[in-house]
Length: 206
Image (cartoon, rainbow, N blue to C red; front, side, top):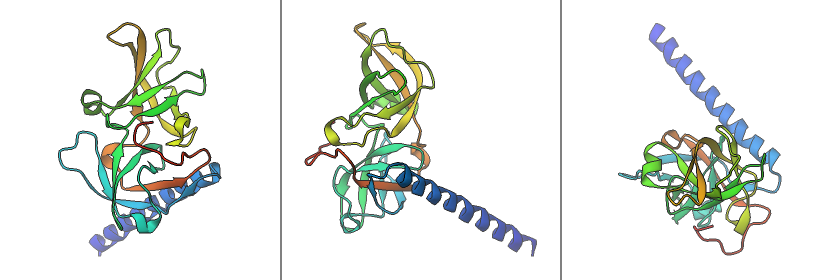
Protein backbone atom coordinates (compact mmCIF):
# COMPACT_ATOMS: atom_id res chain seq x y z
CA UNK A 1 0.00 0.00 0.00
CA UNK A 2 2.80 2.38 0.87
CA UNK A 3 4.49 1.71 -2.48
CA UNK A 4 1.21 2.34 -4.28
CA UNK A 5 0.77 5.64 -2.44
CA UNK A 6 4.31 6.69 -3.36
CA UNK A 7 3.58 5.87 -7.01
CA UNK A 8 0.34 7.87 -6.94
CA UNK A 9 2.15 10.81 -5.35
CA UNK A 10 4.89 10.70 -8.00
CA UNK A 11 2.28 10.60 -10.77
CA UNK A 12 0.47 13.53 -9.17
CA UNK A 13 3.64 15.60 -8.95
CA UNK A 14 4.51 14.85 -12.59
CA UNK A 15 1.01 15.79 -13.75
CA UNK A 16 1.10 18.98 -11.69
CA UNK A 17 4.46 19.95 -13.17
CA UNK A 18 3.25 19.33 -16.72
CA UNK A 19 0.12 21.43 -16.13
CA UNK A 20 2.26 24.28 -14.81
CA UNK A 21 4.42 24.13 -17.94
CA UNK A 22 1.37 24.08 -20.21
CA UNK A 23 0.08 27.15 -18.39
CA UNK A 24 3.44 28.82 -19.05
CA UNK A 25 3.03 28.19 -22.79
CA UNK A 26 -0.45 29.72 -22.61
CA UNK A 27 1.16 32.73 -20.95
CA UNK A 28 3.52 33.11 -23.91
CA UNK A 29 0.56 33.35 -26.27
CA UNK A 30 -1.18 35.88 -24.01
CA UNK A 31 1.97 38.01 -23.88
CA UNK A 32 2.62 37.80 -27.64
CA UNK A 33 -0.77 38.07 -29.31
CA UNK A 34 0.80 38.24 -32.79
CA UNK A 35 2.18 34.69 -32.46
CA UNK A 36 0.63 31.67 -34.14
CA UNK A 37 1.85 28.71 -32.10
CA UNK A 38 1.47 24.96 -32.19
CA UNK A 39 0.41 22.87 -29.27
CA UNK A 40 3.39 21.66 -27.18
CA UNK A 41 5.38 18.79 -28.68
CA UNK A 42 7.37 16.15 -26.85
CA UNK A 43 11.12 16.02 -27.32
CA UNK A 44 11.52 12.46 -28.56
CA UNK A 45 15.30 12.23 -28.48
CA UNK A 46 18.62 14.03 -28.72
CA UNK A 47 20.89 13.63 -31.76
CA UNK A 48 23.75 11.23 -31.18
CA UNK A 49 27.17 12.84 -30.68
CA UNK A 50 25.83 16.35 -31.26
CA UNK A 51 27.64 18.77 -28.91
CA UNK A 52 25.01 21.40 -29.70
CA UNK A 53 22.09 19.42 -28.24
CA UNK A 54 20.07 19.07 -31.44
CA UNK A 55 16.92 16.99 -30.95
CA UNK A 56 13.77 15.64 -32.55
CA UNK A 57 10.12 16.33 -31.76
CA UNK A 58 6.88 14.45 -32.44
CA UNK A 59 5.43 17.14 -34.71
CA UNK A 60 5.84 17.75 -38.44
CA UNK A 61 4.35 19.31 -41.53
CA UNK A 62 0.94 17.81 -40.79
CA UNK A 63 0.94 19.91 -37.62
CA UNK A 64 1.48 23.15 -39.55
CA UNK A 65 5.25 23.30 -39.03
CA UNK A 66 7.58 24.69 -41.73
CA UNK A 67 11.35 24.66 -42.13
CA UNK A 68 13.13 27.35 -40.10
CA UNK A 69 10.17 28.00 -37.81
CA UNK A 70 11.41 29.16 -34.38
CA UNK A 71 11.23 26.68 -31.52
CA UNK A 72 10.80 27.84 -27.91
CA UNK A 73 10.44 26.41 -24.44
CA UNK A 74 8.47 27.96 -21.60
CA UNK A 75 11.74 29.67 -20.56
CA UNK A 76 13.23 31.03 -23.78
CA UNK A 77 14.34 30.58 -27.38
CA UNK A 78 15.60 27.09 -28.22
CA UNK A 79 16.36 27.06 -31.97
CA UNK A 80 14.77 26.41 -35.37
CA UNK A 81 13.35 23.54 -37.38
CA UNK A 82 16.05 22.33 -39.79
CA UNK A 83 14.67 18.96 -40.92
CA UNK A 84 10.99 18.30 -41.47
CA UNK A 85 8.91 15.17 -41.93
CA UNK A 86 5.19 14.63 -41.92
CA UNK A 87 5.02 13.72 -38.25
CA UNK A 88 8.53 14.48 -36.99
CA UNK A 89 11.04 17.33 -37.11
CA UNK A 90 14.64 18.05 -36.13
CA UNK A 91 15.62 21.15 -34.18
CA UNK A 92 18.99 22.90 -34.40
CA UNK A 93 19.61 24.82 -31.18
CA UNK A 94 21.12 28.24 -30.57
CA UNK A 95 24.26 26.46 -29.30
CA UNK A 96 25.07 25.51 -32.91
CA UNK A 97 27.39 27.58 -35.15
CA UNK A 98 24.93 26.84 -37.98
CA UNK A 99 22.50 29.29 -36.42
CA UNK A 100 22.97 33.06 -36.13
CA UNK A 101 20.52 35.26 -34.26
CA UNK A 102 20.38 39.04 -34.17
CA UNK A 103 20.19 39.77 -30.45
CA UNK A 104 20.71 42.45 -27.86
CA UNK A 105 19.59 43.98 -24.61
CA UNK A 106 16.65 46.27 -24.02
CA UNK A 107 18.37 48.07 -21.16
CA UNK A 108 21.18 49.64 -23.21
CA UNK A 109 20.04 48.99 -26.77
CA UNK A 110 23.28 47.21 -27.61
CA UNK A 111 23.10 44.61 -30.37
CA UNK A 112 25.23 41.84 -31.74
CA UNK A 113 25.04 38.46 -33.44
CA UNK A 114 24.49 35.39 -31.30
CA UNK A 115 25.98 32.13 -32.53
CA UNK A 116 27.49 28.94 -31.19
CA UNK A 117 30.82 27.16 -31.16
CA UNK A 118 32.15 23.86 -29.86
CA UNK A 119 34.09 25.50 -27.04
CA UNK A 120 31.08 27.56 -25.92
CA UNK A 121 28.69 24.61 -26.20
CA UNK A 122 30.87 22.52 -23.88
CA UNK A 123 29.93 25.01 -21.17
CA UNK A 124 26.30 25.18 -22.27
CA UNK A 125 26.73 28.71 -23.63
CA UNK A 126 26.68 30.63 -26.89
CA UNK A 127 28.44 33.81 -27.98
CA UNK A 128 27.02 37.28 -28.59
CA UNK A 129 29.70 38.81 -30.81
CA UNK A 130 30.47 42.06 -32.64
CA UNK A 131 29.72 44.22 -29.61
CA UNK A 132 31.28 47.65 -29.22
CA UNK A 133 34.61 47.27 -27.44
CA UNK A 134 33.34 49.79 -24.87
CA UNK A 135 30.19 47.78 -24.28
CA UNK A 136 28.17 48.44 -21.15
CA UNK A 137 26.82 44.90 -20.96
CA UNK A 138 27.00 43.48 -17.45
CA UNK A 139 26.70 39.99 -16.01
CA UNK A 140 23.13 38.64 -15.75
CA UNK A 141 21.70 41.12 -18.27
CA UNK A 142 18.83 39.60 -20.25
CA UNK A 143 19.53 39.01 -23.95
CA UNK A 144 16.57 39.18 -26.33
CA UNK A 145 15.95 38.62 -30.02
CA UNK A 146 15.83 41.85 -32.05
CA UNK A 147 13.63 40.49 -34.85
CA UNK A 148 15.87 41.74 -37.66
CA UNK A 149 15.50 39.88 -40.99
CA UNK A 150 12.34 38.13 -39.88
CA UNK A 151 13.65 34.72 -38.79
CA UNK A 152 12.77 35.21 -35.12
CA UNK A 153 10.14 37.40 -33.47
CA UNK A 154 11.45 40.47 -31.66
CA UNK A 155 11.74 40.65 -27.89
CA UNK A 156 11.88 36.94 -27.05
CA UNK A 157 14.17 35.93 -24.21
CA UNK A 158 17.32 34.07 -25.27
CA UNK A 159 19.39 33.97 -22.10
CA UNK A 160 21.62 35.80 -19.69
CA UNK A 161 25.10 37.34 -19.89
CA UNK A 162 27.65 35.37 -17.87
CA UNK A 163 30.88 36.95 -19.04
CA UNK A 164 32.02 39.90 -21.17
CA UNK A 165 35.46 39.95 -22.82
CA UNK A 166 37.39 41.31 -25.78
CA UNK A 167 37.70 39.38 -29.03
CA UNK A 168 41.17 38.24 -30.07
CA UNK A 169 41.34 41.12 -32.56
CA UNK A 170 40.87 43.70 -29.80
CA UNK A 171 38.44 45.58 -32.06
CA UNK A 172 35.17 44.27 -30.65
CA UNK A 173 33.83 42.65 -27.49
CA UNK A 174 31.69 39.59 -26.98
CA UNK A 175 29.44 38.19 -24.27
CA UNK A 176 29.14 34.56 -23.20
CA UNK A 177 25.40 33.92 -22.95
CA UNK A 178 23.76 31.11 -20.99
CA UNK A 179 20.45 30.16 -22.63
CA UNK A 180 17.35 30.54 -20.47
CA UNK A 181 16.27 27.09 -21.67
CA UNK A 182 18.11 24.06 -20.30
CA UNK A 183 19.14 22.61 -23.66
CA UNK A 184 20.20 19.25 -22.24
CA UNK A 185 16.95 18.54 -20.42
CA UNK A 186 14.12 19.69 -22.68
CA UNK A 187 10.90 17.69 -22.63
CA UNK A 188 8.27 20.02 -24.15
CA UNK A 189 8.66 22.72 -26.81
CA UNK A 190 6.36 24.86 -28.94
CA UNK A 191 6.88 25.94 -32.55
CA UNK A 192 6.03 29.52 -33.55
CA UNK A 193 4.57 29.19 -37.04
CA UNK A 194 3.85 32.89 -37.65
CA UNK A 195 4.51 36.25 -36.02
CA UNK A 196 4.51 39.95 -36.82
CA UNK A 197 7.43 40.80 -39.11
CA UNK A 198 8.13 37.24 -40.22
CA UNK A 199 10.08 37.08 -43.48
CA UNK A 200 8.47 35.36 -46.44
CA UNK A 201 11.61 33.42 -47.29
CA UNK A 202 13.73 32.81 -44.20
CA UNK A 203 16.86 30.72 -44.00
CA UNK A 204 18.95 29.54 -41.11
CA UNK A 205 21.40 32.44 -41.18
CA UNK A 206 19.76 35.60 -39.85
